[in-house]
Length: 367
Image (cartoon, rainbow, N blue to C red; front, side, top):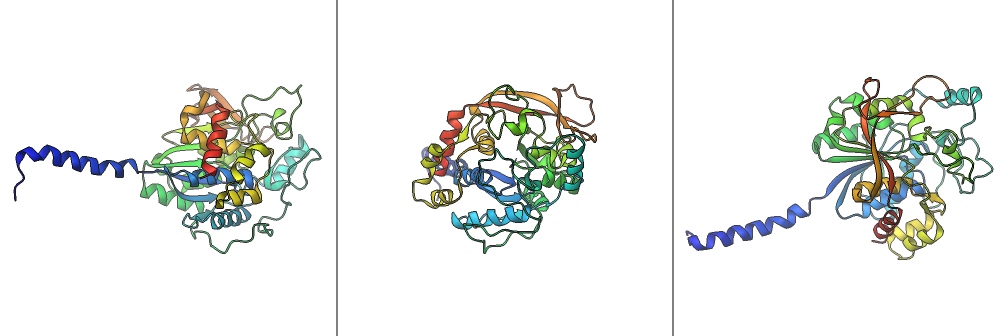
């Protein structure tokens, strides 16, 4: 049966209307690469899991703030408690490519102690006010107050998981890397086309605008004030950082700690996200601690809504691999003015709207 010609425009309009919701429902794809050991590392993961416009393809773990095996267990247990065991978790690198705890001790003995060194911490300084997990060997998984996971990690390595997902969705996957960069470096060395298939790499870390050292500094500012370009996400594995900063990403963004400076998850803010009685609120009530700056939460908020950025620049960027006091420190030049040894121009986020970050944090974790 042939349709009357006069009905054809209406039928085409109806077909277009029917296609619109499917297109609008297309979600942004992301892989979260995180040293997810406790509340400040797990909260940004929850923000992304709670956003209906985002599809989390998977979470990959990497040693940094803690050891990867314990981070993997903490992440799996978190997913169990919030009802998201559909999201795969792939364990990544336990150790840096070259750097070791012994090498770091030699560096400290020759130059100066480092206030914070993540999983390599053997004791906590007297000014620490945060309830920290006890230090332990890399393979040890300490009992967790929230219980141990029963689900298992994806059998693939983190690097292979990233490679597989970017091959499946070329040009559509953002990677949010909020810990050291070892997994990304391994993926790039295993597959030279890896970086070029990633829509954007957003990483976190580094201080380019240090606080005034003659002012009162809290325990987190003390970690950066006297050596501002030494960030654990870079000095934990300097060689991996070099590989990442010289890889051919379509877009490379660094959200610095400057962007979150002074924006702290205090008790009042956490009370706004733990009182609903929903699974995420119950989980956060169990693990969240007030006092942490919103470091990674800011990186997540920047990706979700770039309009919150109030200050940014472009810099050519690398890390110092020379043995010495600055091993692993960020090196920067004006965009395009580096030594042309492979370093690339990086979009550097220096400031954001703090109130909007907090509003995003509260909104997503209350869903």
